[in-house]
Image 1 (cartoon, rainbow, N blue to C red):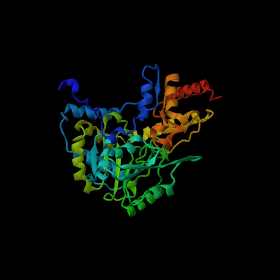
Image 2: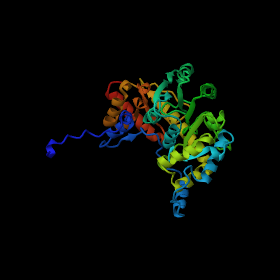
Image 3: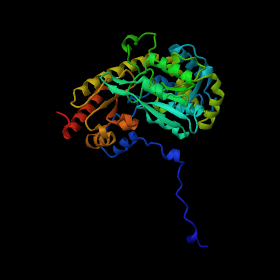
Image 4: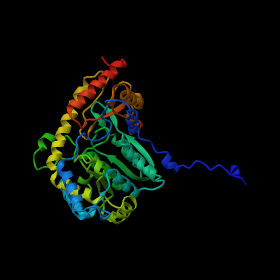
Length: 408
């Protein structure tokens, strides 16, 4: 048999669950900006400021001291102790036995999902939502049902009756991100109490993504400069440390450490041995010198975080006022996170709209559809930058709308 007679091999593909994952529409918009001069990028969820010097210096010192080796799967003991102290000050007594250090917050979300869900399990997620949370369970073969927040006069609100109806006894896990990316919605203490009681009765795991918990603007001015910490309501305030609640957090937002890829999990102690195995088979451990920087962040970074929150609140209010003056824009100042999620002319096709704004006026926003179909009609603007940069972006938005006959 000649080579020409051999059967043509089929095209190799990833498994169906992976091929069905949604690609990042935020990245798609960013790609549309390649080759465009002078783009103002407000599409990603990070500040334009570098990590504070005291944290960078700690990492440099750790590298100089030779902190380049493997560590314990669950994190070095001093960091777990520092995190237990930090979490305890915010949310009540917490032991290092309930803390696991992870290689970023998104890694923590994957590990949490791997701990409790598998193929065929039912997961409920409150949306609009950062797409990673919705897609991670699908990688594991789980089925994800969404319950959408509603938007109205008072901004984004949860329909509690709809959520509880979705949380049936067949549900394995509930995913809640509060403060929420992209909307800035914050689940209230009473809402958390109701959800926790229901999930206890049904035996449902709660995985709470609380990476924006410190970016919470209620009474931020009253807290600044004091010894009190201010944080959004957390399931950790209500749940014992050994029930079906897993809280995920990250160093990325409160200490501007997005590129460091360091996070943590608060979970029942009974899960830790199995969680250590999952860490081993995913990443083995977080880098030692990065963990040393994490210790300094939680032990010395409180004043920095409080000042950051005040800066973000000022930027939020500044951008909200500016956008409110544009005809056709509907925007509400949210109580948390670092985004405005607002409607504007043309946003019924938000991906096409955002690509056009990048190409035509160099304005980079994230399309609402990136956060699920419930986000269509909206766009997301990350306001974690100085107000002069925000003003430049607003002027470009006005120019775009004027060119398309959508603004007076």
